[in-house]
Amino acid sequence: MKSHHIHNVLLTSEQIQQRVHTLIDEIAQDCEAENLVMLGILRGSFIFLADLVRGFSQHNLHPRVDFIILSSYGAGTESSGTVRITHDTNEDLTGADVVIVDDILDSGRTLSFAKELFLKRGARSVRTCVLLDKKTNRAVDMDADYAGFPVGDVFVVGYGLDYDNRYRELPYIATVTFLEE
Ligand code: IMP
Ligand code: MG
Image (cartoon, rainbow, N blue to C red):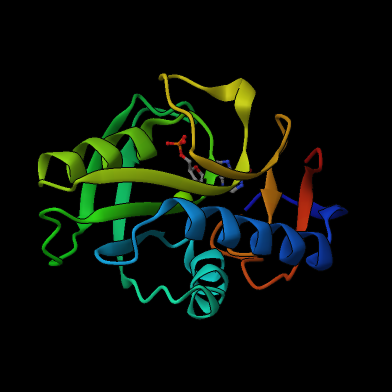
């Protein structure tokens, strides 16, 4: 791991919670309660998805919940764009209204792969929901239906997002500054 500082707080816990509640309302307005499936992409989505679904009961939404793990492979830090399923869901998605949940939309490859996959499996609709949107980094044409906050081209951790699988536990989002060796 490179030496680094967890630098300034970009989004406080309170800001995140407020926005999550408006996202819950938006999703509840759009989605049919009948056959809703919330599919989180591990590991980054676990806290965000947990907060989202806890707000659903007051909207009388009782979705099925599951997670998948996807890995992207490529040379160096710029992934070449091959996404692979490492852990799949067994949920029957025929006719389902799926909401894919991820921590951050970056190149767009992960979400666009997941969306196509679930549509091929017969989902009636597939929407995407991310906490953060790095709009300037897109490699493929992909937009989230629900996006919490836009972020610039910085590396962030907290609220599920990691650096080397650490700092996921932070209740806020902070930027990481890498120090010269
Ligand atoms: P992409 O949109 O396919 O490039 O993939 C997005 C994934 O890259 C996310 O699910 C994160 O795991 C990871 N990621 C991108 N930017 C960051 C960041 O700033 N901090 C932590 N993880 C990130
Ligand atoms: Mg991730």
